[in-house]
Image (cartoon, rainbow over all chains, first blue to last red; front, side, top):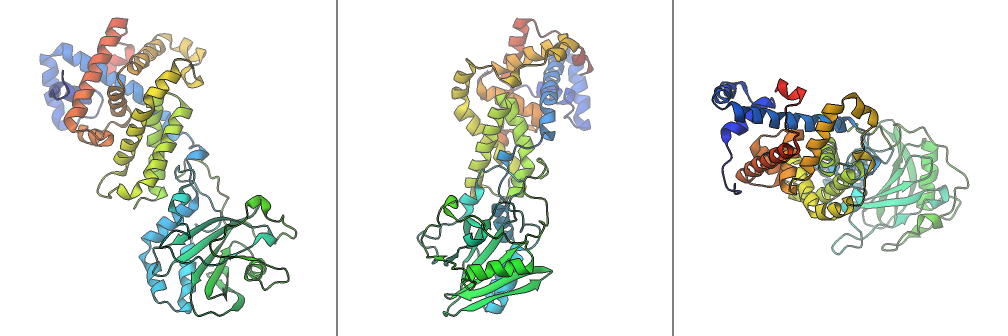
Length: 281
Length: 172
């Protein structure tokens, strides 16, 4: 049989019938055909039995836990959610600093703020594909990157959310044993500076400050006092010197950062951390 | 736009088909991981009007065909744990299990493209149109290859004397 040959439709229908895939409407036709062609009908029955056997052999795979390497970071998920949320961009359109914060809240609100990783699928590092390097031609000027290493946090990701009228940079920091925190930065001339202020929004603390013509917001599952201390460090207004990386400069590698000297008081994570039961998508 | 939740729903199905194709857990998960990575990179190419599962299976099938020759070379020298069945299970249902092993051995000898279609029909049970989409084929080509796969499988099993009805065949 050459590839363009038409296969025997009656035979195909019979296999589908014996495999249980045929609708009731065609079943009478198959029975009539099987009465006329008992040998071929028997063969169709065997083909269907082989299919069922194969299906049974691999049925259990559907219930197996999904290996961690097929799971992805949450950041890609967050951005995808953001893309779907046209309302968020609409808030930014207002462009006044007073409405920037609600936008940040919306960006990080819900269940996708705290633990940093979640189950979905397997792109070892999907966020990398999603992230836009700030040095990319045409990308907006990079906002200065706050350095939280004095509190044991290291920068693990920078992502420019370009689906907004004015690019918003999300910086994700992580420290061992604690939930990640996120800093959101958005250029907002003119140059001015303000000290970090912590306010409660929907029961969650949010620190915001302004430096070098950039609005910053810091969120994370931390007590307000810890968040304020972290924000003061990030803004360079605490007792310790808090270096701020210049645009375009790479952050030092994680192992070059200082160890934690005085760990912040950590709030319990809102959700169990990342490595969720596999398979629960 | 594809998001990770949407991909996550499809992972078990991708893993099942990949396991059927590769017959080993690790190799199958490698294939799924490569599929997901490629799908994510190319996610803008997917149109919501199409079924995501079909698109992902198409990606997986292409990758499978790309890497299959390398695998076959490796298989000549390797016996993996997944391919070794517990002796107890064999003893418990010796006749049926032996028959089953023969069937899978015969399937493994089919040409890759035919084998992929036969396995897809078995594990996903799509209609022909959907099945063809899942592998990026024309429906006629899909049906033709499926028909040839069945034909060849039947011939191989018949020549091995395995084609006698097993007890479960009778339930048809």
